[in-house]
View (cartoon, rainbow, N blue to C red):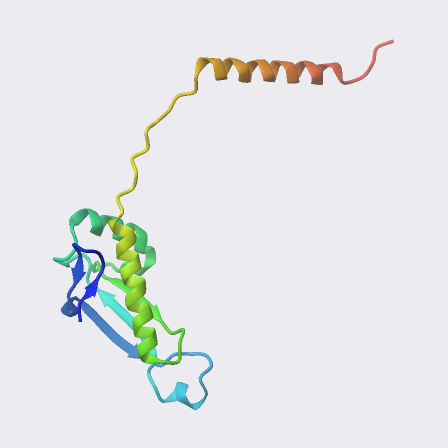
Length: 139
């Protein structure tokens, strides 16, 4: 079952590695017996599914979830069910990659008009004059 990100990007099952461990926290006797926590690993740097610009943006977005080897590691242990944790991990990975596919809008630098600069200086002068009138009164 491939993980569909967008219409153009689909991650094959062989690119994802899942490992299961025992989760900490509440769960009764179940917590000591069943490995419900999921660690989903996606080798993003070597993935043929992702274009190079998406990989660069993904690396920046992933932050500390990005390993030295170029993998994205997502850990989930929120639910008591292994299947549910697995679904959450896959969803988080898909959301992260989806955010990386969005090309950031290029900022167009703007300039402050001469009129606005003059207004600002004038307002500062007026404010300074008001403050200058405050103080001790000479007799």
